[in-house]
Length: 487
Image 1 (cartoon, rainbow, N blue to C red):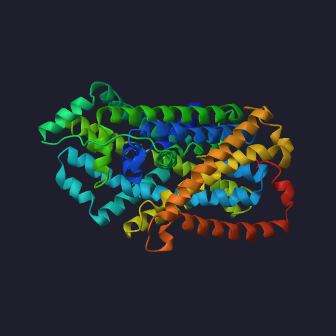
Image 2 (image 1 turned 60 degrees about the vertical axis):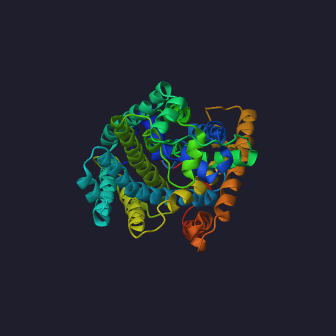
Image 3 (image 1 turned 135 degrees about the vertical axis):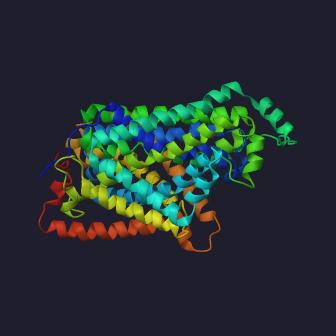
């Protein structure tokens, strides 16, 4: 049987993390947060910085554990070996489910962004055509399965797709950052005056509850760097490159988020954003259209479409490697560990993940909540990040031989500081997120992502214990989960 090949270098690994993190949400979330947290006012940039702290602690935890356990299925392997196999599986199962559904939702939502690009180019007939329900469904499916094929084709096709997308995303996002230097709020006010509009007068104030609530929402923008860990079985020099790639991805994305958000708010008064957000969806292109030439708006909208598109190949890599790792341990059928003899990819695991993501597209087509899967993913990832920090504290007691293999931030006192600080901050964000979700008035319980996540965790528990008890009859499970999966 063929095995995974270590072909991914530092650039490809870092790009995997960056492209999983930066989607079109950067063009929307920092501005729509004014609706969801009306009291955040001018402190969005500060909330973004605060949201980076728990993400940074989680990144440190991932880097520590990746240096000792460089295998496919990263987060599952870390927790199953360093804490407990049950916790590792159910947490990663909810992550896998949320990611698959989110991949479907992203594929479906890309089409309206393409529509906006066509509208900006004044190709209205084509724009209307692609938004026809059946046409939109076919386009979303074609987009998803083209990236499934790219993932199956191997590292060469993956890199040729991902790296140009990442470069375009940063280039077009950089247009917004440069515009923030050229234009200021007075320019915006003058442009509004020409439309017989004015900037609303709202007093600024700071409120801790609003600040924490906004930070919890903005934290979701940092989800995705763990995809680097999932590719641990295909990284060159994994003990060195995995931690470096995680660090580079978090720093690069954090800097990009901060510069992008600061640039928009440098041009557009927060009072205007807050007022507009109360009665309509607010995006960066829509805000900048008031002051920036129309031809530049086309490029900004295109940047948003590309940012959303580049989520897909990296996220597909991540979910398929989780499935591969479960199968390698015998929790899922061993047939899913089969690696393509030519392309050296787990093609069956990729295909199964693509089928589940297809269900996400069909759910969107049938008028389900587009972003339910994304909300489930946020809870799942917060829980996963929490477990990473816990595992940093427990691995030396649960699995001392693997704990001794840690090469990054190897000081145990430093690991305790990272673990405890990460647990405190991530638990705070998890509580805030769950409280906000449960406080939302919904007609049915299944519109609350917290309850859906609990259902998924229950399903994962049933799958695990059924297979675990079966494994115990033929396998020394204690020994199995003390060792790393084979290369």
